[in-house]
Length: 454
Figure (cartoon, rainbow, N blue to C red):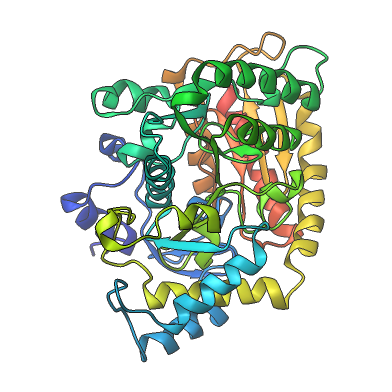
């Protein structure tokens, strides 16, 4: 009697016949399993054979309140029976209006205008174009450059990639990209021996000042990921860098773009990371958690002053030039409203602080591990830096793919961990329990032991 193939195997074969997956060398799937997911339940994903995986990375940092969250799902179903989509040029609808009102209410002061788009990269494109176009409308067409931080990542469309500092991407697509000025990140991992995070921030702000003294006249904006440079390796820095950055932007007349696509909506410990420095950017880019992980949506918030630079008679030619077919999609807006309502109705941030403290306690013993150079955490984001040699911080050769070993171990033991190179990180949904955090950490610890063996 033949044994029937698993549902997973059958679906994987169908997938690999036609689909091309993101951020993936498809050849890997000759040995790395494709995992077909049939459904989600809270912090868990269930594959087509019924195996469960604890989602330790919130499905690329999007999911806040659990997969198939009944409250958000009900709002989506209700909206789908009323209005699924309408052109957003010349038309509007209540979910978008309410969402804009709520975003203005909860974000840092002064951000009174909301431009909607489809995804995080699109939000970055909007902010870059809007900053450049603002200066053009103000008679400063010489401002055409941007400043980004070393180790930064802002997305994979060409404009967003242009202000990212990921070596592989820049090497591959260099002929297509803008060239930003790079300011050294205040990343605490790269600090001098004995230097405090605040001292690192102060030193890096001095270097940024020197860059602005040379190039502010041609610079539209400085773009940063507040507090945590996520895709660049979960690099973290002190909030004082943001307050100093805000002061420098004001002094040198350049815009401050805050990319809170990954760190917004409670990830950093506050609703928005900028709150920890008590600053308001000129542009705030949001996505990922905005819809609780249900649908693509992004928003760029900016000031009335910037909005007014575009507000003129049609023949003045000052209108902002950007559109997407699904701008202001009612389904996504309604889901976002329900996600924000959960923040309003439940003690989400307070609960997160308890979970973050538990995660920190469980990770603390790894600081003494001979192949761990750093354990760092900001709110509900934590990372472990694996190295070949702890004293010198010499990394493992990239070709050895030690992080992949951790990923495969996690899958074998029902946990989704997806390291960034050799950096094992945790960014779980907010509905995770302390016992589930224990499972995440315990699985990672054993996976790390497997990964660092010769």
